[in-house]
Image 1 (tube, rainbow, N blue to C red):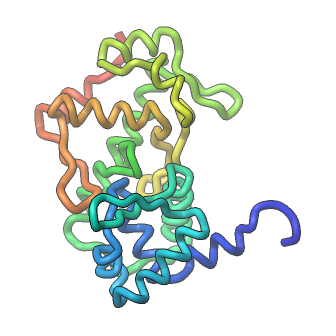
Image 2: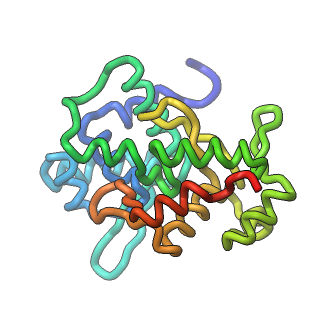
Length: 227
């Protein structure tokens, strides 16, 4: 491929099993040290350093220093979107790993996809936002309606402030387990933050699982229902 984006280079970076494991470990939006990522990839520390250098050079990771430690994270939501798409493709083509353990049903139900809600509840939220005209789809684009902006404000989400962010307000993200769309972008992130702040749910430490309390899931189910 002589012209356009160099997908071969990106594919080579992601295609190595150790680097793929590192990227997957960072998929939930958290930052990890080189030693932690070495454990995730099941490689020695010097080998991990080489992999991390390649991922940094390729623009897939970012790093920040705090004290003596360097913390690595995905370079941005675009990287997370690409990884989610690859997970979907692997699932569709049956290129799956050994069947996940007993936590897998919880991951399918509700999980963090970089910084927004995914899984069954994420897909349900996206559908409800559209059905209640909080968001609208036009020409492949998603935007918040004037009525939706008011309803979101009642829930504590300032859409006007989100519009000032550098990232898109609303973006669709293909859910690898449900094979349909959930909501990403600044609004998807803000809504997940509100669910946590309201005490409806919390993230299970060390995983991507989002666990809603029974009252929290009941409140979630009623959120943005048609008036």
